[in-house]
Length: 373
Ligand SMILES: [Zn+2]
Image (tube, rainbow, N blue to C red; front, side):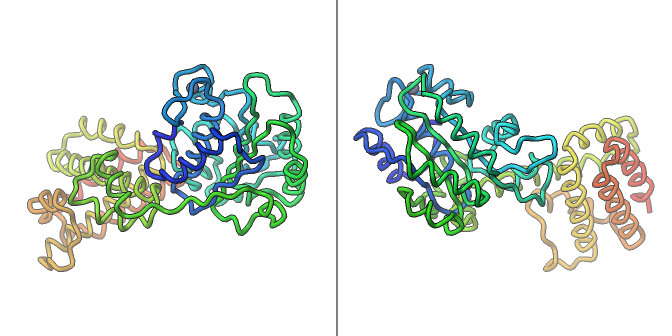
């Protein structure tokens, strides 16, 4: 991760760069600010900048051996620490889940905590940083750095350290080892042990302004200029919220396409094509399948209301509306309730881990029968 890979935050980047260039890096640095604005990305870029063998224009080069190691998360002087869920078989250290965390970092530049919980297979979990982790960090830091001068810790969410762990880390901050840099990244700094917090050199990272988010949307996400202000406003200063809006929009396009295919092929009774459709839709995965079925239920209701000719109550986007003009007469008082029931029961079957291909094919066959009524 280079500073250039992170949009906006020019003041913070300049400050971090200056700390390195003037050799004034503190032993304990905290990047604090709301979730989803790029703090951990900044911490990663800083760590790569510290280790880069060939810094250029105030950024790491991205090409030297050290930068390449950073890109693949195996730079030997960088220690990643993050909250995990303790299982009976694990030693309760971040290393146990490093493969998952690498996957998370690759897919989540803006650190979507909900996605981390999904990767931990527990959407309601409360991951922590356990005392075993602090022991592991101390052990790693007592080995002399051999690849570069500085050993760097990147700890995500220090507010999730258990008290015992926090006290061990406090000791490490009070009696720093030579050439060690501890970088902490916090969404809720008020929850960090005050004795630790007061010893950190703190850098506030601010939410993005609406103009900054608009620039990001237009330049990096290819969003049409006329749509950018509305999306930027809804994002409330966070890149992560932008990503969520974009992925919901992608979903909607893909879901509409699947919905139209289902209805056309069911109307024409194309069993072979519907079998292929079931396989394609099952490829959305469990979560995606459930969201798709919820989308279909919404489309049924909207088309039924369109059919009743109550326009003020219809909430469809332009593409959906175009399809509905011809399709809505097929959703009527004779079949709407049974169709909705079939989609709902498919959704429940998927949530109970049923075989998605079979469930979707079964659903398609029922749609064939119900559309004729
Ligand atoms: Zn480099």
